[in-house]
Length: 395
Image (cartoon, rainbow, N blue to C red; front, side, top):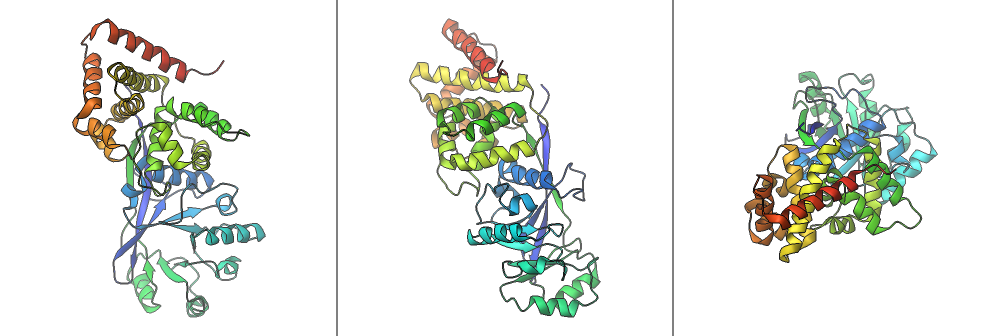
């Protein structure tokens, strides 16, 4: 079977004046070899957000450190909604953003909601000085920026005591000396640490499912049952919803044992925001065969569990996670550690314990060629028919 494609996100460490690593800037990367971002448009921003929060999980990308994320005008004005809370992020206003009344109003609303703002590649007189009263950070390019009146520029920024200066593009001793001379609170650049590219295997939701989900979410009366059924019928969407429910975006620590619980935990508003970003983040689709294989396993696990009196919803989740793990070329135990699964589901996937662990062994044995009797064969055929219907394109 063709392995899942790879997704990437770049991160560059940010240090304080004492050399302590305190934050990362998250960067768009189209490949593992890419050192430079190459683009800073809405696609790049959406790509970084989707990958960081739903492919990797923010804990894996940044641990407990703050993340600086570049935003374009669409996010700043609220045309595209941020699907995460303000706790662990700093929103960077790119130097290419034109500061007009809509941008000022949008950033004011974000600050009022608790988000911190950074002005990227700040240049006096560019119009971004209108945002200084809202900013928590100002980033200065000490390599290629206009340094002709650095004394005056720093003095003007120091009139805003709430602002920390981030010295960036520190590529040699000259830039490091400037950062020290002006007491820049934070520092970033190749002289301190080069960007790192993180890579993970991904099973992307199909374009059809994304659009179908987005349509259902934007219906006048969004049906929870319909939304759960769309997500449950796409292993990749299910996995992303689970990861999102375990990230800073969800803002909770509860564990889940079904797709429905994950959807309820995140809330339809957040699901709508993620679906919007997934449409923008239009990457390669998983094949229909991959979808059918993972869903058949999930459905078969559910059917077996029901026949022995175990939790059907939890069994579907266990079968789904183990099926996706196989497609991603990783172990069920490794994938389970990244997801907010209930103890019952996690134990079954990690060490095969409990009723669900026994159910998974029955399914594994059937997959390995053990007949399992007529009842299991019938359950398997029903699972195939169900997964085929679930992934079929509506006529």
